[in-house]
Amino acid sequence: MTEFNWLTALFGGVLIGISATLLLAFNGRIAGISGMVNGAISFSKKEVWRWLFLLGMLLGGAIYEYGLASQATPTSTFAPWAMILGGFLVGFGTRMGSGCTSGHGVCGLGRLSLRSLVAVVTFLITAILTVFTIRHVLHLGV
Image 1 (spheres, rainbow, N blue to C red):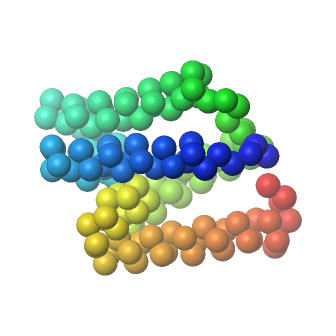
Image 2 (cartoon, helix red, strand yellow):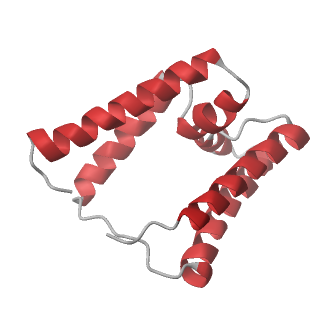
């Protein structure tokens, strides 16, 4: 496992907060990624901002990984089918929960939304139970 760098994490969190704040302040939109992707697939000219935001996320990650990172990003040993299944389950959960971790956690909590607080607590409890089950019940030592 790679060493944790709290300065990099802090800088990334600040950039996420600034991005979400600017999007809300100048566009009146919430930076929830599941909603952004859902709206982007309409391919409407008025939704071009969604594509630009998503492109900025991808480019930002690529610039960091291939230009700024001091060490390689850890890779996963999960089977591709498990990651695809997990992706579909996350997509189902974001529709069921009316948003994703970025929308509820970054934007909703910042707006003091009770619905977002309930969603984030649910996300965290589910994540904790999932990790416990995978590592200690199924013994899949990830």
